[in-house]
Length: 377
Image (cartoon, rainbow, N blue to C red; front, side):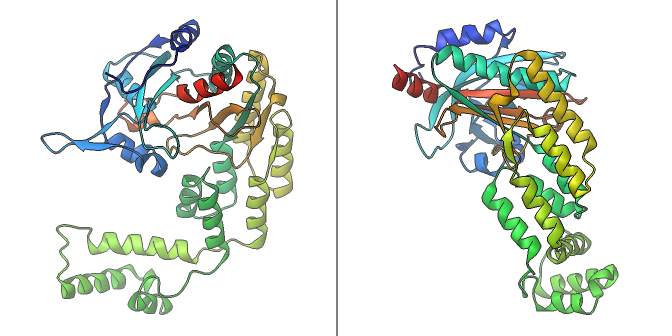
């Protein structure tokens, strides 16, 4: 039996989801932990309740629905496009509220018209919330990870730094720290005196010398290569770290990144503002901006006014599998997130799908909706 009760409006919410032409599904509460640990992101990983099977397999209580619904879709070999709806308990540590709570939502898999599917996700989330919270003003903030990735790539940073910055998207503190690291020299002594001596002598570029040095060090210390990476693997990783540590952003590029991340305006004005930024910065963002503009047009077509949505260039959500659109909906004047979602085009392939399946979805927090509903009553 659940330890918490479903809100009284749950049957009506289920009807809302059914009316959006979805198929309701459920997934086991006990899930394999590996997909969440590998793909969900640090913020969720540290909140998961872990256990293990008799055979030692890592398991966890279901911390969210997107990964389980995608796994179910792959396992049942169901064709696309497919729209799944769900409502059930999730379990994760929260700073406020119960660690066991109900979520509902929609996962929209396989729709090839990406702009239309993105717009539909935002529209559906707004529609369900308005039905359950009549008279309550709602605010939508929207970001786009693919635009940020395009800006970072156009700045010409090494692949390692691009990966770090993209991974930190949506985490303001981490992003600011990485940009500070890019603008200031790395402290000496990070890699040890012998490695830094090799760097000063230019020997890190001599792979054979570096591998030989690591091999000798491992042999002298009794470090077994059978249980770890080989000297060549360590050498390659070390050279990557040195490259990252020695990469510096020039003042112009750093200023461009900061200017982009400071963008916050109406979504209706965002396409023109992004195009102006790209032109001024001399950056080629054509494909990413075209997708962005298509989404804004699709929102208008579906009946959502972009002028009512805030675009924030630095906005992201703390899940690693997002690839494009990200959004959250809160009550006006309140930071309480009632719904959140985004696009995750790479996730199903990473989970084992044999072909790429575009995907977008959103989740609703039922306990938060209930609290707002109670306060408005």
